[in-house]
Image (cartoon, rainbow, N blue to C red; front, side, top):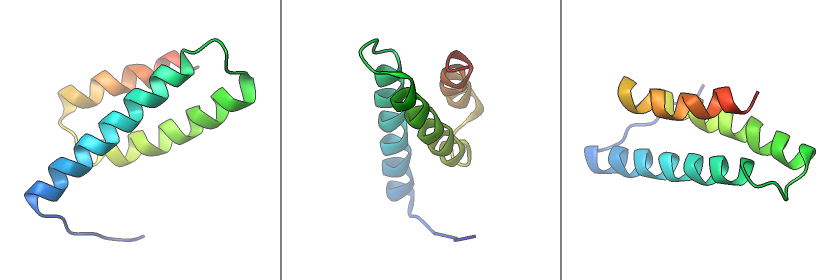
Length: 73
């Protein structure tokens, strides 16, 4: 396990980066031009990023991105 300490500004930036990355992955997963193995790789990465985001996100925001997890199944 690796621990990191962030300032408030850094934490907000980290939050922003994770949200934008998840938004991009959700958009990619809805692209019909991508095949199964590519979507599966994106899905695995999404789950990892989501777990990172879950550590810092308020529950209301978290539920928005948890919907992305359900739509991938």
